[in-house]
Amino acid sequence: MPPPVTIVVPCYNEQAGVPALVERLGRVIEGPGRGWEVLFVDDGSADRTFARLLASVHQEPWARVLRHPTNLGLGAALRTGFDYVESPIVCTIDSDCTYAPERLPELVELIEQGADISTASAWHPGSAAAQGNPVRIALSRGVSGIYKLLIGQDVHTFTCLFRAYRREVLQQIRFRSHGFAAVAELMLRSILAGYEVRELPMQLEERRFGESKLKVGDAIVAHASLLTMTATLVAMQKLRMYGK
Picture (tube, rainbow, N blue to C red):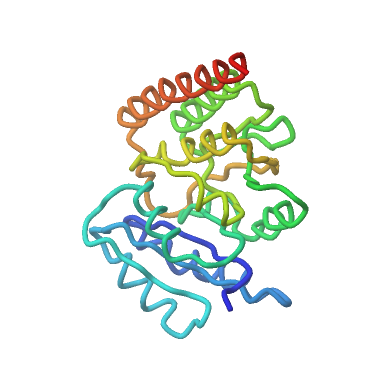
């Protein structure tokens, strides 16, 4: 029988933060009556991330480690993780712990209460001010605002990886992006397909280990393409509505 919750953790060149990441996830997993599992996906790291993951979890029954031989991007790492998941609830988190892993049970609770997707929301009015790289913050906040206007839904944050899903959503929704834009694409396609999203106001914290892998130029190009795709899907949806 599969565990009730699987946490998928994409990792790329995060060797310095692996011990803290595993320790914090261990405390979450070992909560009363949980029985959850963690699936780490090393996305072709060029440093010792994979070795440190193996060393850190080799005696932990709740952990599995997968590896891409080369770096394929965040979207590809997520697809690999989802292919290996059988739990009814699937969480995804950032390997840099910029959102507190200890708050995962709150996201899972929102799914258990009826949501199809629950997400940490740094741009929700109830969230504390974000910390970290101002360029990353401006990009995330800016594109999230545009997506919110475009689809006409009261969702504030589209770029946050820190989420929980019903597994059925991941089985039905196909996303194509390979990089960071995959996170927004998965959310947008799910909303347009009628799935319910609930947000949990949560502060984006400053990274403590390593450096961000986000390349601003690549991200802008990817989101521009995603905006075009979303506008097309919204237009098609309206045409179908008016055609009835």
